[in-house]
Image (cartoon, rainbow, N blue to C red; front, side, top):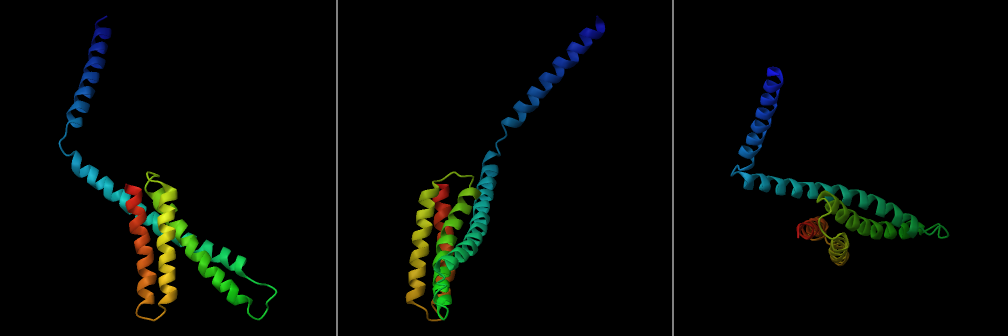
Length: 160
């Protein structure tokens, strides 16, 4: 009987001790920096997801565009059609892949169709600017700035 009473005392004391420990740690005032670190981590996840998704979309879209654009009957200039199809497909694939990567990296918080639409619009605008300004000083700037603008816009929409 004394052993049972001692056992009940030990079990009750351990439960109270655990409740005290949980209560003591749940009222810590340092919650804000932890939330800021989680927010930065999710931004970096979205950034990595967007870069990876954009790269996969670029390759897949370029290959699909080349296959669709290839004119097998024109043996002399068929590669030109395949090249044009590849550029168009790569632009579309990169835009959609980047938005999907950001969306998955952000744990699907935002609206994927809205992010895809914004990424496609920025990608189309960048492609038109690059097509109209093919001079060396401006074309590389446009080709670098376009995906950066897509990343910034899709991450902003995902966080919204």
